[in-house]
Image (cartoon, rainbow, N blue to C red; front, top):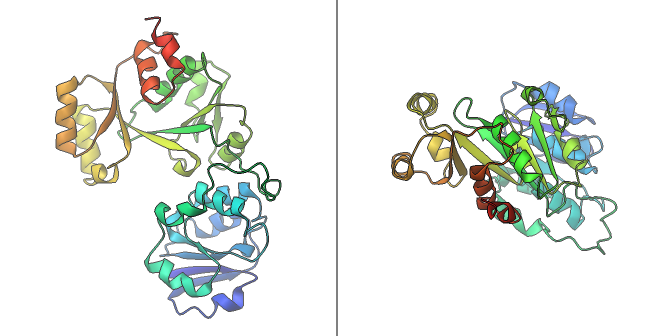
Length: 320
C-alpha cells in the first residue's frame, strides 16, 4: 500500500490507479512528515514536491533524503524554473534522490521499477560552470572537490570514533579537516574541542558550513549515509564479533558486496585476510591492527590515508 502527499497536484495524483493506504493534502515541513510517518508502514511514498515547504532550498531536499528511505520515495516535480534547472536536478541526484518525474503517468512504473544511480547519473553535473544562470538560485552545498567520508561500525564497537580521532590528527598536518559524530557524544572524551557532535537533523548544516575543509570525517552511528561522498564499513574480525554479526544478519556480506570494507583492531595477517575474503565472499580494502591512539604520528594511519588517496601524506611517510 502506498502513501500520497499532495498539494498543487492533488487532482492529478487522485487519478492514479494504485493501492493507497493514506493521503494527506497541504504544505508540510520535512519534520512534519517525519512526525506523521515514523513507524508507519508503506510501500512507496508519492510526494508532490509543492507539498514540501521551502522545497526550492537545497538544504530542505537534503533533509528529506536524510530522514526517509529514498528508494521508497517518488517525487512529482513542478514546473518552476529552479526545479527544472540542471543545478537542481544535479543536487537531487547528489543527495540520493533518484526517483523523480514530471509526469504522473510515470509514477506506476517507478513504483515497480525504482531508479538506480545509473538511471539518473546523466543529471549529475560534477563540474558546474561558473556561468550557470541557476548557480545563485541553487548553490551546491558541498565543494565538489571536498571529501565527506563516513565511518560505520558493522560489528559492534568496531572503533569508528577512535579511528576518526587518529585520522584527523594525522590528516590535519597536510589538509584542512573537520570531524563530526552523529547522534552521540563520545568525542568529548578526547578533550579535543575541534571534534564536534551533531544530531542527524543538523549534520547537513554542519557540512554546508564547513566549505573551507578539504575533508570531513563523519562518525555515522545510525546517521544517514547519503550525506557522504564515500562510506567506510568497519569490521573488527574477532571470532565472537563475526559470529554475532552473522547470526544477527546472515546476508550481511551480500549487503556489503562492492562496499569499502576495512578491518579495524585486527590481529589478522595477510593469509588470514585472504581466508576472511574467501569465506565471506567480500574484498577487504585495508587491514588496520590495534593502534596506540595517544601517538601524534602513526605510520599505519599514514599508510591507510595514502591508500585512501590522500597523496600529500606521502611527504610524511618519507620521514619514517
